[in-house]
View 1 (cartoon, rainbow, N blue to C red):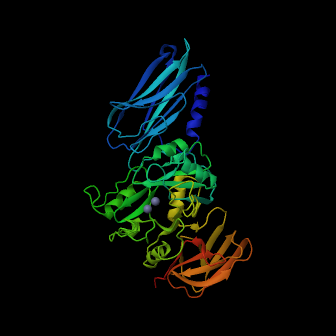
View 2 (spheres, rainbow, N blue to C red):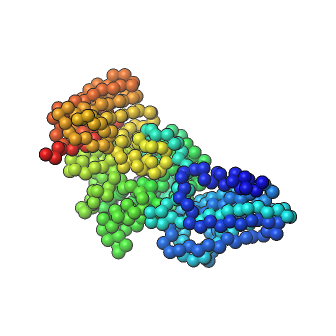
View 3 (cartoon, protein in one colour):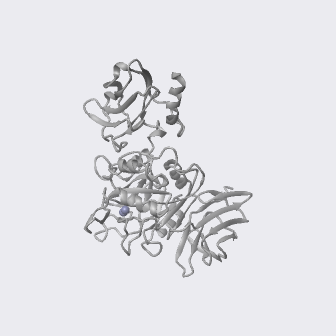
Length: 483
Ligand SMILES: [Zn+2]
Ligand SMILES: [Zn+2]
């Protein structure tokens, strides 16, 4: 009878994402002799480990109960009792009940506590230990595992916000302005009906453990860890890093902007330049992007719309279009840059603007891949399920936004727009308005014919009846024929 029960106990652990094999597996039995004793399971952590993830499974048929905890070579690192069959710990963050911090090489101990084991009983247990390092990453360490939604589709989110872990604030119980708890920020995002948020406190990872605590409760909202890398020469969101990235450009640790960009890429996150067209100087220190040696191939995205700035000289769109015209491939995204989930008037609430990403599923990896692929549009106002699908067609081939076509004499952009009846679709060719068409009806399809487009890029935006930007599409790249 033991074996089927053991398999049943193991099933929930392996039912999530496909999991790489753990580095260490310890099996044994809890017997009546272990009743009300602690049973250490020692293991050695080699140098260079960036995250440790532990699982426990055991046969519960004989009313045996096993608690779970962890000690590093010198100190206590956490305890989850009988409530958790898995935890993860890293320098930047840890599961609830566990303490993030350095992972020194040496002898660690998983600690099994046995509050109950009947006399004469024998319950098989299995402890696994998985190390993340370099390219080896274990899916079970993700903040949301498995994905919140396994279906491909358009997902709506806000990629820029702050809470008590940097300069976010809100009204306290008695109305005083206080650092605003992360919970309030995430709750406001859930109320806004978003599918995902990136919480991007300035230069820190202190909120990552909080996201781990909140994710199981907010099980319809993907929580993506992020950091606003805040330097003297500009701000960039690092979305989805695995840990801390040093922001001190000009220091020995980070000699120049390219060193920062290499570290950002190694962290697994994607880099997006925030509010890049703002002035930089005493009016707004380090706000605009001014690093001259930026490696544009290591920038994934530009915050084309920050808060309410969707047009005018301070909007990011002109900065983005200029880089596209210079031949760089950059996805235009948006963020509210919310600092108060109660969003007093004049400031953008969470979800305004919204970035809408076509992704393979609702997980951090898939949203990052979707932004990298560029099938993305910005909903300047958010708050509704507007849609802007753009498909390019040339020479018998098709491409979505972010894709590439060989420019042909008959190049078409087919538009599917929902929720914008009475608005105007505007074709942008290499940064300049080229054609417009009215959008009739709530579920509209229309086609732009690009005469002789040449090379460069084309995109479609939607303007409201007063001429203000409502939806902002990403480019389809038009490649010149090589002969
Ligand atoms: Zn900023
Ligand atoms: Zn910000």
